[in-house]
Image 1 (cartoon, rainbow, N blue to C red):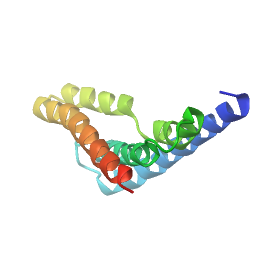
Image 2 (cartoon, rainbow, N blue to C red):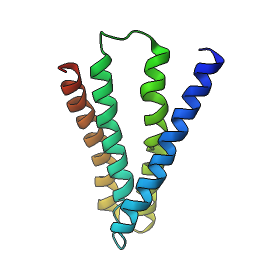
Image 3 (tube, rainbow, N blue to C red):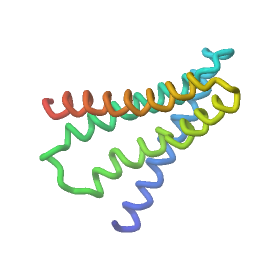
Image 4 (spheres, rainbow, N blue to C red):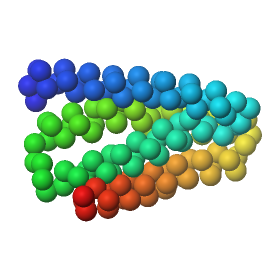
Amino acid sequence: MTLPLYLLLVLTGGVGAALRYVLDGLIGSRTKGSSFPWATTIINVSGAFVLGLLTGLVAGRMEDTDVRAILAVGPLGGYTTFSTASYEAVQLVRQKQYGLALAYGVGVLVVCVGVAFVGYYYGSRA
């Protein structure tokens, strides 16, 4: 990867992170009082779907890995956050909400993989 492409990847990652920050605030303000981490869940599920969709769209059509990274890895890597989801699961355990922590930890992973498959399915048929 050349320096200009690397810088573009960094820039697109920053755009994704900024979008996550804005959406986290908007969703968080509407779900105050809930112990369930709605903002991170919605962000990660939507990001997984979009990544699956983009992957399906470019499958067999675009072999340039640099361009694929700039289109998907940068913005969606900045947008989604597995580490925050993990932290929030730990916080639920600390609050002694064991069932919710387990459901959240497993559920987010299963749902994200599922919507990524759905996105890929539709993207590959476009």
